[in-house]
Each structure stands twice: as C-alpha cells, then as structure tokens.
Length: 301
Image (cartoon, rainbow, N blue to C red; front, side):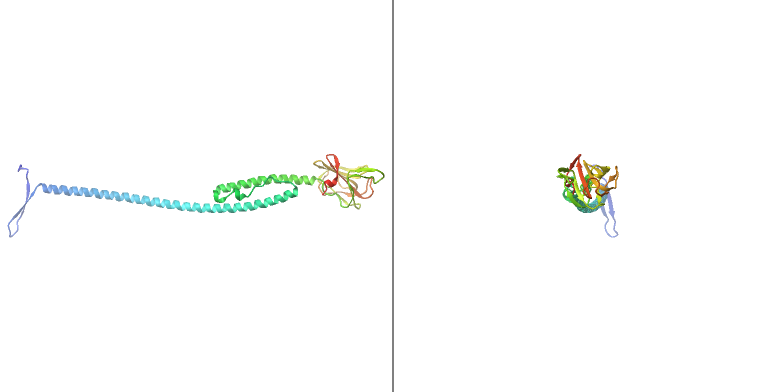
C-alpha cells in the first residue's frame, strides 16, 4: 500500500497522572461521517419537503371536499325548496281543477235547462275534467296549460251555445204561438155551417168571443204589413213574422198599430169589436204558413 496516501488522524490524550493514550482514526472516517450526515440531512429535507407538500395537497383536497359537500348541501336545499314548490303547485292545481269542474257542472246543468226551455241541443259537453287532468301525474305547468285549454274549449262551446240559444229564442219570439185574446173559443178552423145562411163554408181561422174593447195581442214578434179595413173582416191587422208565418186579426173595434210598425210578442195591437160581417164581438184569428192558412191550434200554446 502506498503509505503516502494512507493518511491517518492521531488523537493524543494526556491525563495528569496516567500514561498518554493515542487514538488513531483513519482519514476517511470524518469524510464518511460528514458525507453520511449530509446524506441523512438531504434525505430528511426531501422527506420533510415531501411531507409538507403532501400535507398541502391533503389540505387542498380537504377544502375541495368541504366545498363539494357545501355545494351538495346547497343543491339539496334547493331541491327541497323546488319539491316544496312543486307540491304546493300540484295542490293548487288540484284545487283549481276541482273548482273548475264544479263550475263546469253548474254550467252543464244550466245548459240542459236552457236546452229544454228552448228545445235545442247544444254541442256535446265534455266529460269529467278530473279524468282528463290528473294533477298528480302532470307537471304543474302542463296541468295549468291543460286546464286552460279545457276552459278555452268550454268557452268556445258556450259561445256557440249562446249564439244558438239567441237564434232559438229569436225564432221562438217570432213564432205566433201566443193566444191573441182572452175569451170563449167559439169556432174551429175548417169546414163549418155558414152562420149567416145555408150551406157549409170553409173557416180559415178560429174565433174567440169576449166583450168589446178586450185587448188583442200580437201572437208573435213581427212587422205590421196591413192595418185597415177588409171586406167581410171589418178592421183588420196583418203581421208578418218571418220563417214563413203571417197572422190576421179581424173584426177589431180599434186598430192601435200602423203599417211598418215592429211589434213584440204579447204587445197590444187592437181592441176586440164586431166590425165587418160579424155575429157579435169576437176576434177572428188566422195563421198562414208559406202563404197557406193552417189550423191555429197546431201552433198556439
């Protein structure tokens, strides 16, 4: 071995009373010790830095999870609020559906009464609304839209019904079915014995007898087309009602309307008398349909 490179460190211990001690340390030991210490320190520093970094990552992950939990809690809270609103809207829809159904039932009952009165049949009425709209199976917005559509359909139906009803009532107002005077029914429509002589004659109307001055009423709504004197009938009023109907009122004592006057059903148009060829105070009443005389008893109510 090359002694030049085999250096050593010599430590001498000189006590006061004893023999001097000599400790020889190879020169590589301090170097190795320092290297080991530096290595351990570097390793410790790396481990410490790694732990610090991991701790920082763990803190970030922790805060991230906390943030996610808070977001989930907020979202859950919002969902609960939405669910509560949905339940409230569903309940409101159910109540409104029931209210609308009750109203529609009332309207249907009224329609049936009016149909019976007017003698018409309205458009087909819808079924039970609760069968068409089930709040528990519909989104409230869809339910409200369906309810609105149902009401709009009913509104259109009622508009048609009201129009039909108005037309029907207008028609009924024009039909000459009101008895034109109070009194005793004295003569039928059709063939009868001639009250002024022999033989059989055809009577084109009916006779209603009462005292002079008894009110004569328009049997239906219409327009006066004649107000004057006719041979045999005396003082006469003729009213055109439309729908092919025309009425004649004969033997009046007084005429209270003029040609062109519009009269309402039940309006007083004259006074009973015995003018013309008459056996006493009475009203001779005729109904013509499409230009032909018909039995008034077929129309009068």
